[in-house]
Length: 315
Length: 257
Image 1: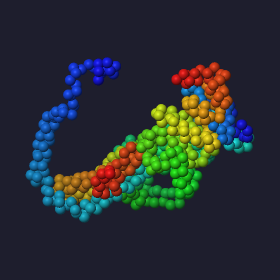
Image 2 (image 1 turned 180 degrees about the horizontal axis):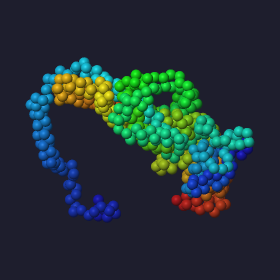
Image 3 (image 1 turned 30 degrees about the horizontal axis):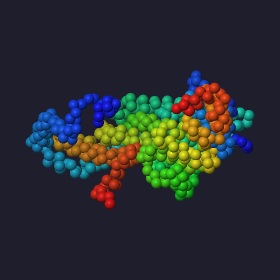
Image 4 (image 1 turned 135 degrees about the vertical axis):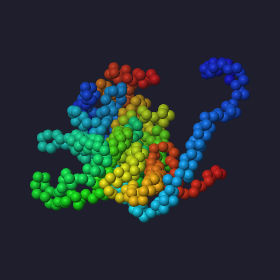
């Protein structure tokens, strides 16, 4: 580069030996604090390991003997059942409420808004206890003409089992949270997408399910994964209404044997295992809904399972 | 032009809040005609185009497409606003191409093109797929059928959007500044596709700033300013010999550039 062109390109004047400078030969950056932090963490981990091994109150033998116990297994099944049913209700209700809150109908908007306001505004534990004690408010439930004759009726006490109370409490509460998540997702889709769908003659329902919702899923799935994991743990609240989920089962055992800590460890281990599996599942659901969102497509679950082939060498 | 117009707009008025965007637009588009709408930004050309397929509702006047009133129906002696379902039905015959393409990013190129003919027109999948592949070949993208829109350049995306609209076999195609969001070197491929469609006799109403395209392809150029049609006629007359001072002022900026 001569002086003239340098002046024209606006580069600062240099001493003239820049030809020998090459950043590729630069010394690697040093990170002394990383070594310090690493040492501190190592010491803390060693202490934790020491505590786990030497503290006899953990009673690891008791942990392992109860880990596979049949009663604990039944508690896990109840916890999983409850999680799945409450989440399915929550998600379905959430979609309906979110669409309602974005509707053109002001009455529908208000009703859906009020639902979200109420169920998000009261503690889920209180809601659970409320549903469990519904018979104190309404001893009889019936279906019929409003203010007119009844067709069928039930005794509330017999109808609302602990399981149903738990499903109602967790599912209806979840619906309020899911509504906000779904609404946020729907709003994040560009309005041009709706216009393009409309211009092709698609109706509102088709536009929602074929165009807007699939794109909104990308924004809905991560917080929903959060909600599922929250739900796994929130199901432990149902132990207050005597439903034998995972926590209630281990409580029942340690109330008898006084092995409180090891049994709580059993419960924690199982909650961790369940949430870890969900965490991996969420990754692949997210991947599915990010189709076309980026130029490069990462492998799908089935591609992921296959052994990666070596890249072929071009001839 | 002879015969009855495919699109007839009479005294179309539209306001957004206190701003009157369309102040009585009259416009006819005859079958097989290519009409280019020119005008400065804010002149209401996009709003008018969008009101032709009810993406905007109008406040006064009337638009008919193929003899059918857009957005309203006559029952007895009064007009009634059409329900959404019937509006959607009417839109099937009018194709639209947007400035920002608005392809469905979660569907492949082929998926974008076949979605509405299968889902809305209920045509058999195999038949629609064949037609879609023909249309993609026509816009020069036969090899991109399985790509996702975001893997394509802007010009390619816009050509897919054109194929998607054509798959519905529209009687009228609306183009809303189809090249305004494109890099300059990609504008040509989209205009080339549109030129081919015009040569095939497709009825087109085009909002654009491409004066050269208007001169070459349009049967008629309509100049819109301040919400009214200021000038209308053959491209040679309007572009080279504008009688209205506002048209002259607008064109001088483009021709000088």
